[in-house]
Length: 208
Image (cartoon, rainbow, N blue to C red; front, side, top):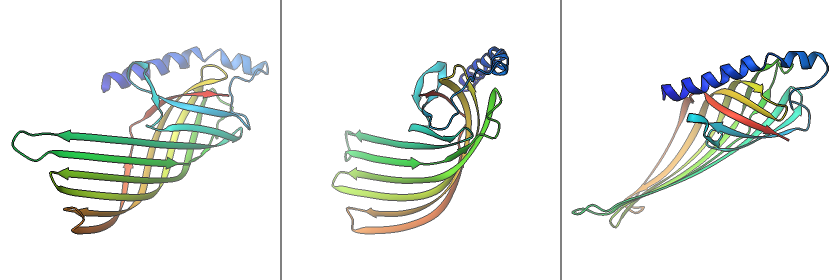
């Protein structure tokens, strides 16, 4: 993990050094970014050794309302299926579905600089369903959540249409849980608050 983060940080440092000539182009009136009203961007995550994946595990699309503000829609879906067949015990099967939607508002207070600071805040909605089977016994749970997502990041444009960014996220959410044990013979409910932060997310945006 430390090697992966260090490698990505080196790439960012090299790109920042390369970006020094951009200031001269801006002084000549040539715009070097796509932070303009009406622009769209598709965002991807950069993982170890520059592998590209969905940003934050989501399909992420951004639309600029103005030069200094944007809305970003993130939709995430994961499905997990596991089965164990022990020799002297019941089969164990586990199925899980997880669906998340985020809609943060993003603000760029330093949009005129080479390295652009941005922050954001917006709602987050989640739904998770899980089922476990032990032979003829079945346990299940449904979880609904609503929360608030906070974002702080930096973005740098390698070209007018392609940018790199590093982003830190924090969120607080409220969840409602409904579950059952032993094939719905025993049910339970619960609720509660949860707060969490993410590791720094490194990403790439393609504008059009």
